[in-house]
Length: 137
Image 1 (cartoon, rainbow, N blue to C red):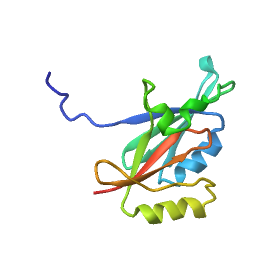
Image 2 (spheres, rainbow, N blue to C red):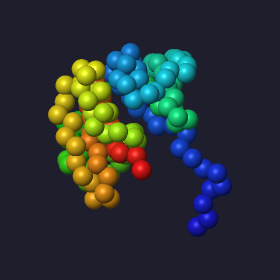
Image 3 (cartoon, rainbow, N blue to C red):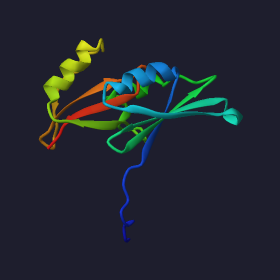
């Protein structure tokens, strides 16, 4: 099969319980808000953020369902079919970890050496969705 010409990641969409809380969290990774709009038929508010040309589309519904417990830990969720997480690449993993702790992220943020030879850790957003923070290079 032939690949698409000049394809690249455009956006990742997530649903959250509190849009403002999500914006504050994802700003820690360098995302900047670029626009907001409503979808009345879906009772949803949408916040678009951008980081290095990749957009994060945040949906906040008037009535949302919480993330199931089994989706909150990477070891429990990897064998479930579907999207798992997205990763943010950083030049200094130790500094990124400390910056998140300094910002009040109250999680262990254990650094792991991956099978591919890169160090990484996972952090959960305010709704429990996983974000991988991985060394660049």
